Length: 131
Image (tube, rainbow, N blue to C red):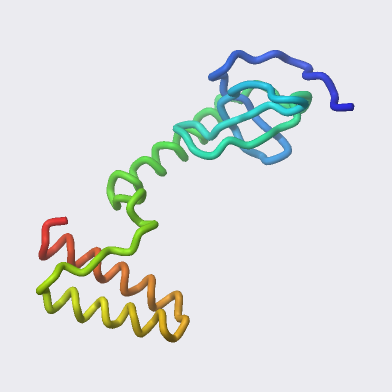
């Protein structure tokens, strides 16, 4: 049987989970677990309610800085779009050349070279196609 929580938290309270060494927003309790979410959003994780405690000012600051940094990366680099490889613009010779590099890298199972080609394609899109 799971231990009973030692403290009750309101949803949205920033708590510290010593098992993962992370601070997160308390969401709810499901079964024997508490659900926590990273500050600023992200994948929830399960925690032992009995081990949770209110986050210290340092942990709150650290979680806030981490969330701000992740948000800045997403906003600056279009992080949400990084999961999809950029497509070549029809009729653009530079796009076709970089896409050829990427296709060769895939054929050789060279994931590093595929990533390099994706980066080159994104840079080219920003510089020459305004995307």
